[in-house]
Structures are given as C-alpha cells and as structure tokens.
Length: 367
Image 1: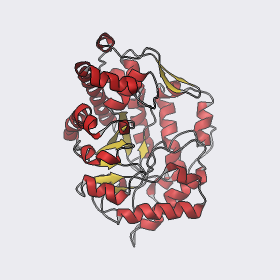
Image 2: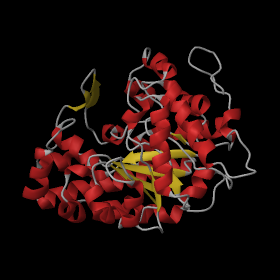
Image 3: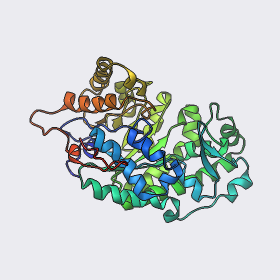
Image 4: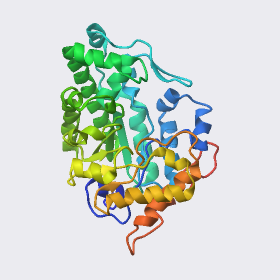
C-alpha cells in the first residue's frame, strides 16, 4: 500500500489526488445495505464475518472511495463486557442496565482481546483478501468517553446529565470506568490491526458535550494513552469528534496522526489550531449531499480551497452520511474531489474502481 493516497495523506506526504472516504459510507442510504438489513439485524450482521465484509465492500465498489472502513458499531465491545445491548427500531442503541454506581462498574467484565468482537477481526481479513491491496482498510472503535456516555445514560442523550453527574460527583469511579474502557478499546484496536487494519479511527462523537476543562482533565489522558499504546504498531490513528471546535488544541495533544473535524469550523482555521505537523480530515456538512449538484460542487471546492493543497488533507464529511442521502450525489462528490485535485500526469480513474464486489442479490456492484 505504499502508493495509497489515503495512507500517504495520513503521513502528510504528497498524493496524486486528495483522498476521500466517508463516515457511514456503508449504511441505510445504499440499497445494497438495505437488502442485507431486510434479512439481518445490526447485531446479527456484526456477528457474521461474511456479512460484515459484504457491507464493508459495498461503498468501495459503488463509489470509488480511497479507503474501506470495516462495518461495525462502536458499542460492540460492551457486549463482551457483560452489558445487555439492543438496537431498538427508531430509537438507536439501548443499554438495559445503565452503569451509574461504583458497584455496577466493578461488575463489568474485562474481556480478552479475542472475545471482544471476533467476527470483526475475521471480516478485516476477508476484506483485505477481497480488495487485494487496491485500497486500505480502516478499523475503528468508540473512544472511552463516548462509549461511557452510552453506558451510563442507557442510550443516546442530549444533556449527558448522568454521565456528568458521575464524572463530577464520583471522580474515582469515573477514572475506574475510563481505565477499563481504555484497556478494552486498546485491546480491540490492537486485534483489528493484527487482523490487517492499516489505519484506525477513534470515534469520540459526543466529546462536544464537554467543556474544554472537562475534556482536558477527564477525557484527554485516556485518549492519549490509547494513542501512545498503538503508536509502536506503526499504523495511523485518526481521532474524530463533533462539536469540539472550541478545544481542537486539546484534541491535537492526544498525539493522533490525523484530527477529524466537523463542519462547524473552517478547515483552515482548524488546521491552524491543531498545527500543520498533523494531518486533518473533513469537513463537508453531510446535509449538503441533499443539495443540487452545483451547490455540492461549490461547498466541496470551498473545503478544498481551505485545505490549500497542503499535504495531509483527507476529504470527508463532518459526520456520517445521513439516511436517505441520494447515492448518485455521494458518488458525484467522490468523483469531484478526485477530479478537482488530480495532479497532472496521474492515473485516473482511481484504482479501487477495478474492484468487483458481489451484491446481496447476486449482481455486480462494480464501477
């Protein structure tokens, strides 16, 4: 993968065109994915390596993106920790016994790495074989704070009151929980890398619910520990969060190779804050993909202009692809980013367009 534009950008090296992949690029907006979900729940998919691999490959085949991110959910490790988790229709993840007391924290299991999500490891191996080196595979996990917020709240939240109540009112219990989640997350990511993941992303999606002080004192030390423990493995680590424009400098202190930013901050301002010695990922508003093509092009150009052609930019959305997003608009964005940034004399179309992947109905989804 020495010529992978995605991996080169992670290292802030020159590329032939700006790499692009999209968070939630495999998901409900794709008819191929909906066909799989019609016969399997999310947890069912995540427990079967072949289905995980199938769903992971769908957007690579259809869109021509520069990386495949393994299909999973950030809460999967909780199942191996003894947590009762389900995904309720229209409600998202539900934790049946929220963890809000010291004794509940003590009851959580500390699983061995191979117990955490074995189907995900096998799926990474399957995807690597299927892709044959055409694009790299990204592994991922939820960051300790974001996973803790689901565990404590019992599901999604707007105020994160119970999470903050534990964080402020029982700092020793908070540290115990963060230590445990950090250890499990590190083991999970190590196992993904051992299975063949060529980069990993840490999703701290709800870190924006915190103040800069709380992030620095109650979250950053554990994120930094994960990054430090993964560094000797030699794969890029991406740290992504939303609503954190007010403390990007603290995110950069994590030591992550790439900082992902959402659309609430100009890309160039964010880069100035985190430092040009770090790669940056982002940051188109996902809602723009519902707009007419000329508006998609205008906004994509604005992001690229803010990047200014500096090495180390990975084009992505500021969060995941939204359900009901027009597939053709997503494909248009991928093509546009490549075409606008293609260096003279470079080979195009992108190599990943040569990948043929079998869709769930037996047809071909190649481009």
